[in-house]
Length: 167
Image (cartoon, rainbow, N blue to C red; front, top):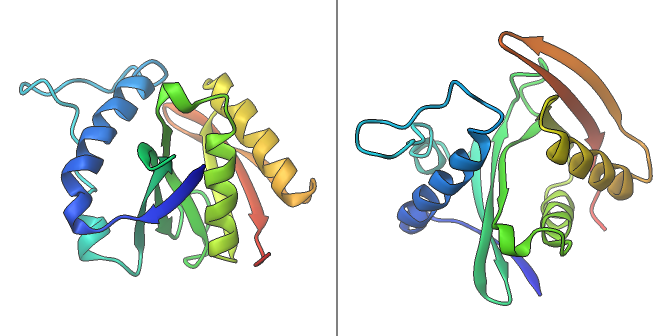
């Protein structure tokens, strides 16, 4: 069973550790991501999730009570001018829970919990993530979404936009 729990500042060490796994995975498609001299990638924006709770939301994905990943959401997006959209900034599911609909269920829970205009940005060269998000958003919206391409050096992005409503 998948659940989505809002994280608190007490979860910051757990989230920091999960972010290391996530960034390691992402380093395959973001070659400019480098380890620091301490052997960690780091995520400098994590403190914002506790200091700016009206603009940053952190969630833990749990699978049968065990930690299975996380979602970081921001109000506002670098992809669109609307300051009130909700943006899936970071999304990570541990490998053992992938391909078991864990990510899809967690995304659906998030979008049902926060009816709003949503933006999901995906690196064009991240084929697996692009397929996941296209299918997940199409299923959630019944095909009612838009997608655009955004070029921001050095990367090309696919930007999905859609509305969520309470179930």
